[in-house]
Structures are given as structure tokens and as C-alpha cells.
Length: 179
Image (tube, rainbow, N blue to C red; front, side, top):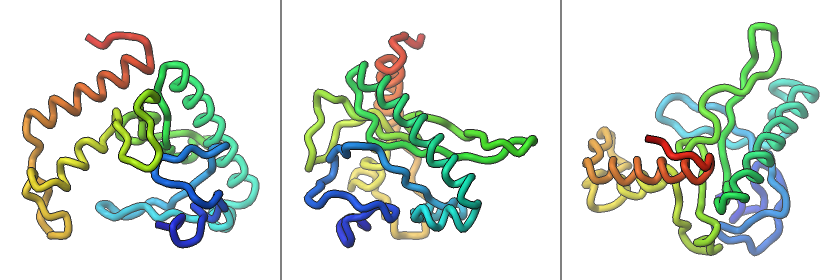
């Protein structure tokens, strides 16, 4: 939404003409502030991060984020997978050092696409939670996400298909079979 209005994402200027699924020449740091449970995290620009935690820590968060992303992206690419994006959550250890926490590079926190099926401008096949989101927003689920009601329980076929996608991602990324 931000890109369509301003050709920026989190205050970072991007080339015009990008479509869903376009690859950037270099990864970008796209910070967000944590929302209350049930709400969406809010994307912010780098200046906002600096105002919250100071220049030095903001620079270090950006450096760490991009370093971990670039390493993961390189590993995934060697295995025929595009790491489209991911979410990292950082905190402070007991000694005050910046630590990477929460889940890291899972199908719940990342978008993994098969490189062979990548086609900018269209929905990408994926090994991530988008499959569940698509079902929940389809007529098949019978759920209106604008309502105040809880989402429906996932049918077993959706659970099984999601499990298969996650297992395939694991096996492709690690080169190991999970039994």
C-alpha cells in the first residue's frame, strides 16, 4: 500500500514500476513496531527506530537484520528457493546485548517461493502460511474476517496440505528428510 502511494517502503525509496513479486537489487530493512494482540504491526521508517532506541542500536539492528537475511537468502537460493521476505524480532539479553529471538526463518515468519515458479506480477506459489490465509479468506471457509467472530477451525485437508508444504520447505532448505 505504501509503495503504491509513494514508491517507498518504510521510508526507503524504491524504483518505480515494481509489481507484486518483483525482486529488489539489494534487500532493505523494513522495521515495524509490535502491535497489540490481534492488530497488525506498524511499519515505520529508520528515523523512527533511531528515535526509539538511538542511532548506534538502530544501526546495529539494521546490520544484523540484513546480515542474517542475506545469509539465509544465499542458502535458500542454492536450493532453488527464493526468500521473498521474513520477520526478525530482536530484544536484549540479561547482559544488555542485542539478541535475535522468537522464531527465525520459519514458514510462519517468512515467505518462501520456489524459484522455478517465480513470476513477478502474479500470486507466487509458496511454502508458507499464505496457503492458510488464502483458505481463510475464501468462500470455502465461510468466515468473514471483518466480523468480530473467531476464524473457523481448519479442516483436516487444509492442515495436511499445510503440513506437507512446511515439510517440503524444510527438506528443500536443509537437504534432510524429516521423518
